[in-house]
Length: 221
Ligand code: SAH
Ligand code: DHB
Ligand code: MG
Image (tube, rainbow, N blue to C red):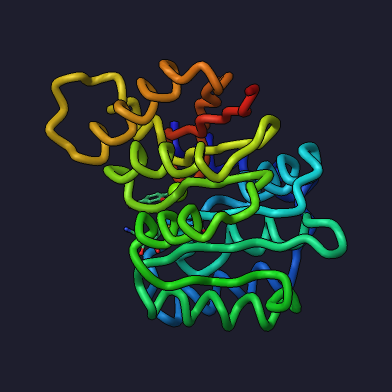
């Protein structure tokens, strides 16, 4: 199937996602720097752009920057005066991301903060941070339950919370899995389901990156 999925991605990319030099340059820079090629796909980046535009988000938070490819998609969708904070553990990833964001002309509205995401989130909460309008969770999958807990503390009614890579080629359905990533996204989904402040669904996706999916939630109270 994956050949079909790639062909379909190409078709829709060609028609819906015009070639963008800054985004292409970011992927090329990531490759040159030897970063793993685990960024969202162009059509998935467009999906993040749509979520930012549809929610009217002005303050966005990303957990897991890598080379800033998804960051770029969201940053460009923000309105005038909008800001994005992206949290990244690896200083080398953050450096590449900062270069890409600068080259794309959005460095002024994006901050990449280095450190364990959980520590950065706790620091934001302790500092009494304003709530974020959209939170994209895409770092280590075993950390998702903790990120959800912190995201709720940094949210307000209407905040959109998205988790990437929750399907994992269907492995999420295997309760007996010993994969910490699988157990992380399973627990994440359970916690979302138990949280009365959230309404959520999952969009299973197929793409050049294989079979995966997004969990999309909105804070209702
Ligand atoms: N959002 C990116 C891809 C992120 S890949 C995109 O789609 O373009 C996941 C990133 O999370 C990696 O860069 C990894 O270094 C980072 N990461 C892993 N564990 C982390 C942690 N504990 N805190 C912050 N970032 C972490
Ligand atoms: C991996 C991480 C991601 O965020 C992703 O979209 C795909 C793969 C990984 O860690 O392998
Ligand atoms: Mg991801």
